[in-house]
Length: 162
Image 1: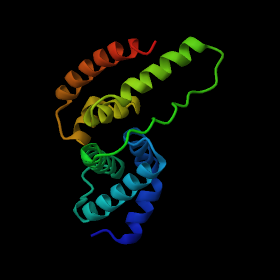
Image 2: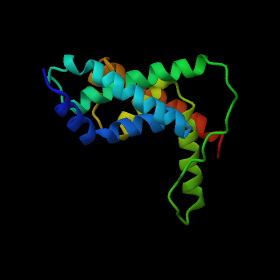
Image 3: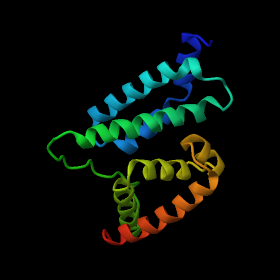
Image 4: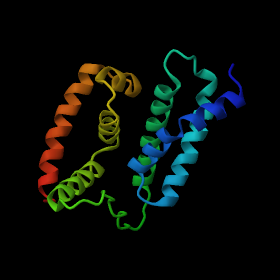
């Protein structure tokens, strides 16, 4: 069984994965920190079962996404006040129309279900449908079908914000 030192080194080498997932699923800084802790805990609990059949980064994505989706669902069930989402940060650019489109797309992505957000994030990271399917526990064909539906949904949703 891999040890604690191996786990810590692997997490440190791949912590950007966890940060990306936290930024995708949570809006406030404290929620992001809480989710980060939950993902680390879930990874630590699951680490003894990590056999090395897949790359550590692939395994960590799967743990992070599953934890985030569960955490997100718990957050949605809690009664709370609605906070304004943090402003979408877009690169400074002279092209206002392009910035508006980018902002509309980020808002539209934020409106997707947890699983759809995960698919979009992995797609934007240039993972193949086969790799996404492996991480999400679905077939590559299912990923392709879902991505086509998501793209249509995003195009329609983004129109509302332009």
